[in-house]
Image (cartoon, rainbow, N blue to C red; front, top):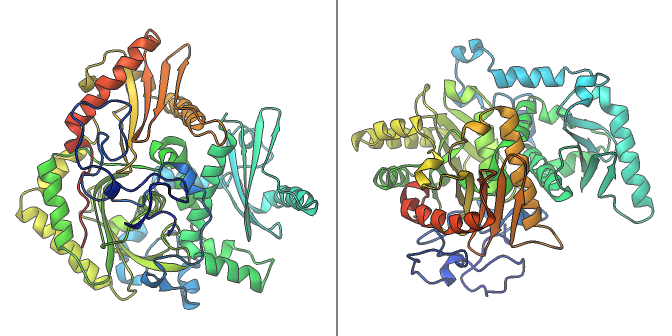
Length: 533
C-alpha cells in the first residue's frame, strides 16, 4: 500500500499521479461550492485527516499488488497450518471459537444461497447459460478451471483450455492479449500469475470497466489465500487444483459479482455512509474508539453495505477495496448472525502477503448492524469479543442504540429533498473523504431491470470520464427515457439523472444547487472526522 498512502513530506506532484493529501490543503471550507473546488474543500470532505487510503478512482485499483509493503510488519506471516483452516471452511466464514452452535445448522438457506446453487447447476449447453450478459472465468496458467459463476467448472474445462491456449499463443510472439471484440461481445483477459481471469460480456461496458471487475475477483481470491500462498502452491505443483483451497467460497465470489453490477461504490472506489444525525454519529464513533484492544487495527461498524463508523490505528489506512471485501464477506454468510465469527482474512490492498484475523458479528441477531474488528493476533478472539460487548454497553448507556436502530428504517432519503423537480437521481463522491452519497431510486427505477439499466448508464459516463487516453471533464447524454450528466473535478465526481424534458442549461444550474444542498447536509450524509486509536 506504499503507493496509496502519502507521507507528510510528499510533494504535490506525486509519482503515482494521485492528488496531494488533505494535509497540504487549506483548512477553510467554501461557503458556496462551485464545480471548480479543489480536493479537501468540496462538500463532504474530511475536516482533519483522511479515513481511507488516498485514491482518486479505479485507476488505483488496477495497480499491481506488491508482495511486501509499508505495513508488512503489522500483519501475521502466512503459515502452512492455516491452509487446512481455509480448506472446506470458507463458506461458513468462522473458526471453531466463534461458531453459532447447533442453531446455525438448521437455518433455512437464504434466497441468495439458493440463487448461487441454481447458477452453479446450470447446463452450459443450454440457452439460459448463453443468454447471460456476462460470464467470469478464473483458470490457472496450466489451463485448470478454478471458478465460473454459471455452470460447473468441470463442464467448462475444455472452454477454459481454449482460453489459456489463446493467451499462450499470443505470448509466444512476445505479446500480451488484452481483449477480443467480436459480434457484440467483449472478451477481456487479465493475467495475474499464476492465474488468468477472463470476462465475456455483451453488457456494453468498456474494457477498463471489465478489467476493474476482474481485479476485484482477483483480490477476492487473495483475501482468502494471500499472494505468497497462491504462488507457493503453483510453484510446488503447476497443475494444482485451487478449488480445494477455495471450497465453499462460491457464495462470497457470487455476492461480489452482484455488488459489481448494482453498487455504485465499487465503480467509484468509494463507500456510502449511513445518513445519521451528527451528534449520534459522534457518540457512536467515540464509543467504538473507547472499545479498543492492543492488537486492534481497524474497527468497522456497518449497516448493511453502508458505513456507520470506522476507527483505525494511527498511521494505518484502510483501502476501499479491502472494506468492500470485508463487507461482502460479512454479508455472504448467515453464520455471523448466529454467533461471533473468527476468521483469517487478507487485506490485499493493505498487504497481500499475510493474514489479519477478523472478529465479525452482529450487535443483535435481528439487527443489520454488523461490527468487524480486525486484529493482528490470532489469539485475540476473546479480547475482541469483550470489545464488542463494551461497545454495545456504551451505546445503550449513552442512549444512542435506539437512534441507530431507527436510522436503519430510513437508510436513505428521497431526491425530492434537494428541491430540483427535474432531478430523478444522482451519485456524488467526495474524493478526499472517499465517501459517496446517493438518494433512493425513484419510481421509474424500482424494478431490477431498470436499476441495472441505470447503473449501465452511470458506468458509461464513468468510463468516459476516466478514459485511459482521452478522459473527459464532463459529459451530457440524452436518451429517450432520461438525460444524464457526468462531471469530474479535482474535488468530486458527480453523476446526475434528469427527466427527459430537462435541458442542458437546467442541468448545469442544478449542479450548483445540488452542491449547496450537499454542503448543508454534509454532517448527516458523510463522516467528516476520522478517529484513531
